[in-house]
Length: 566
Image (cartoon, one colour):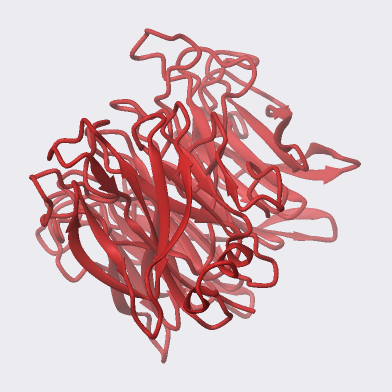
């Protein structure tokens, strides 16, 4: 998918007003008809040109009956397409609390829906796309549905299979939890398995999260004890053997601690399992972590622990996880500065190792928004929910009508060189360049591709002071040296120098763009600056800031690094 904000491929320097943020924010939506406390964005999902956003507390038919908004991508960007509701809506059903979409199929959880006459038993509604419209084709309920099961609290969809968590199921005591697996055959959905932990007890909340990929499923039990330590959490792996789903392993953290919340989120990839623990204490108390497990032999082995480079106390990293191919996005709803803005971190898998390549946060973020409690990725598109946005009733701090943000990323392009502890005058910033007169570090991000032939890579710098002059520059090597109020992280090397892009100006929002056309532009630079396939280049933006905190009058963004492809 292209970078929608770009209006001309013939212009190598583009400065546009009103366009926003990194990595790279394309559009923001508040669903039609939203009211206070609708929780739009509580769950999000993406597949190709379709997206769905849950609003579980919307009063669509009855109080908190819930709704789900469907968006379609076109040449004009994302547009709201449909507002879905359950075929049998009831008060407080919570339709839209969990959502998944894959191709022409969508699954929507309503954990407090009536099923077989049982209050709060929960259900999963299946919708199919036909003739350009999404229509309900099935309502899935547990064969042993009972009061307070809350089926649909979590769901996952893979082909003709759906798994749903029922956190309140009580086969071994209240809130033990279970997960139900359904399959579509000959046009009919049938429950084929009910999976439970082989050591499940009351309070485990098994099914708080679920993941599914082909014949492998995972279910998180966020309340599980680890020895005598309470509420550490665990994740259970199930694999289909013949017609049966068999528990093959119990995953636990190597550093168990009280209320760690291991298993609050989970995902199954083609070659691994990711398990989130938002209250993990690696790096910072309550900073959170995501544990990566792979299956090289007969067991699932922990191979990596993911934490963000700018982890801080109470960040809750791992509060949401979504995976698409070699990319993962991980939510961090308590981050950023000031506290509670929320952020989405982008990780890319190279070989068998995941590394952080970017970070997304909303252009209009305010204290307490908490973006990152839900997120999804498909291809180069990211969707993030923000249930605490107050757009439907400005000035009401507890409106919580909600919002959702679409971002685009550039695969293989990594952000680096943030201004950490080493800053010119204690003006450090956890992710961007050093803090400037706006109170933030300016962030450089990208969308598009690394292809020299396509030459469609676009750079975006934001959180610059409004209207300032700026110059982008590029080099083959990296450094870390003070430059004005910031750090220069790009340097000459590998037989080339340091090359300047044309002078540009930030718009009234403190945003500027370079590209597309960077490769063509480089052909006008000295010979060593001509971008060629296979070459690694690093990019950064320098800008004026007369009111900056250190008094030098200039500052810099973070850097971007990439190896250009043919």
